[in-house]
Image (cartoon, rainbow, N blue to C red):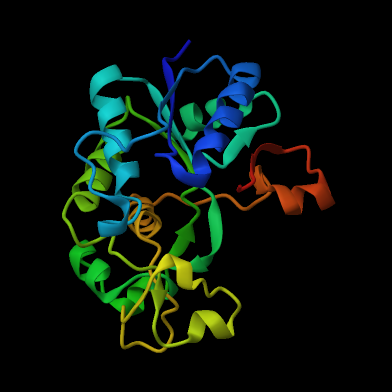
Length: 243
């Protein structure tokens, strides 16, 4: 059997109790060990306010380098399994990766600075599906899987690609019902179509697209708890439920 690893970070605050739920659920539905940081961020990771969600890249890189798993799965602390995870591990092993479509486009949720760092113009970014970085998986026995984690870490540690704000100051996110001032507001782009910047999610979306990987649509494998309560799709193995 392949050597597997689940990676997560709560780093205190409202998400810390959620990691306990994740650990209990994982012990029931998978034999994969969970490597997590509950009270602090991974060593070397910048403060969250200075580089949003950069800790994800640091955590993935450290687990890959230290434990050398065959298969690695990131799970936000708010995500937890509700059924046997074996079909998901099999999907990662078969295809080399697992990503979920978030329903938006990279061009809508990426800052000018991030696109510059990634090396892509705004118009092509509007052709790229945004993935949901709440959970994703890689086969690290494949070069493209290991290079994904290396690239994620590189952009997460450059001090500017993740950024410090998620909302663009043009008011578009508010008009479309996605505005959250608690997540930071700044001038992220002059382009009137840009709602904000999704930090690590923008990085992952670009890296997956660059490798030609297509994300799956919810509710296959993962769904939000509020949606799953209405559907109960049998394909759903993981749920995302915040504090």
